[in-house]
Amino acid sequence: MSDPMDKVTKLAGQVIGKVNEFAESEQVKGAVDSAKEKFDEVANSEQVQGAVSTAREKLDEVSKNENVQGAMNTAKVKFGEIADKLSGNGSSGGK
Image (tube, rainbow, N blue to C red; front, side, top):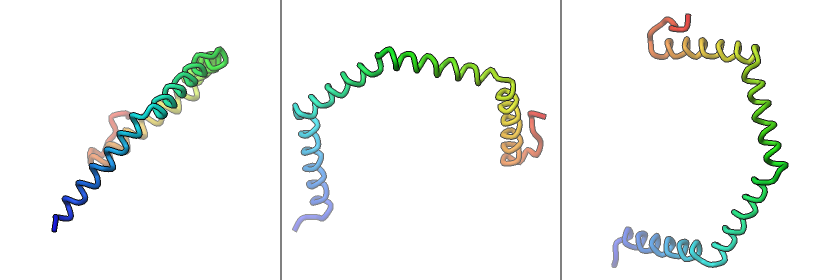
């Protein structure tokens, strides 16, 4: 009688073999190539490029906003205070 681990190892090897066969099949490769082409078409479309450009501009505007910068500074100070408390230092380097 063979060891249960030998049976598990053999079964795992068979599963891995079947998965590899499936992944290497022409149908799967064709589907992956087709999906890549479609993704590239979408990513390169003028509408997507315009949307990405607009999103970058808006993100840049938001990041330069005084309220956002103030909130970021406050958050940094608070995180510093929390880090100090957790590390046992007791005082914040941000104060």
